[in-house]
Image 1 (spheres, rainbow, N blue to C red):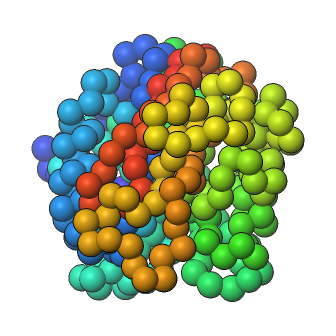
Image 2 (cartoon, rainbow, N blue to C red):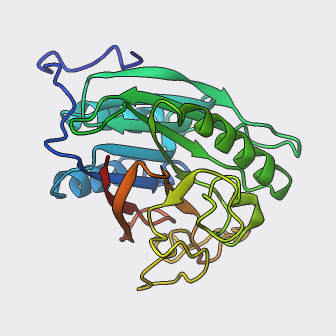
Length: 284
């Protein structure tokens, strides 16, 4: 199990914290380095999680500094998980930069982390997965996190790699993949993730915020495919070269047949250029 060595001494291992098969999930791109708010965004996230009932069983995070993850790990009990560095020493304090998963249980195993193809060059990207058991589920849950590149030359191949690895877990597991995919639902690059219930889908996943199986729509107040990325919430405004516009780029993919009654809602984050994506589902 890949956990921090500096776990609180008072922490007591606990079984999976799902009292029933009803679960809540959270995907959030923290903008932990670029937005320059350092630990303020961590406090925001902690308050959001602690104020939620029920609290999310799985939290997938992008653009996280190791120091930010360490604070989350210490402060948020009973959450445990894995930080995966993608760029060494990138953050303001010299700590590594990367992606992370938190689970509301100490009972899990680390399945691995895998580099994604990078034909166009640029920032390294990865996928990382944990496995745990959930009360009421007929198979173990595999929870994965990824952050797809902004370089259009890399997006399709990276998503295809994520879809292939996630599909490989599906025969024996329920599978969740959360992340910032840096493309919109109607993009053909996302077709390997979407199940065939979605127009053009060739994969095995339904997305939590597309309950009608639509890959269209979007926008503030929309029922499905709400916008999660853009500059509207960054206090310092957009960078001069910021490529982002308002659009849906954050996703919680749930393996087909394994989750029912799912829905999602994009909320608000003052200190990130993304909005948190919250989802609920019944795991079968």
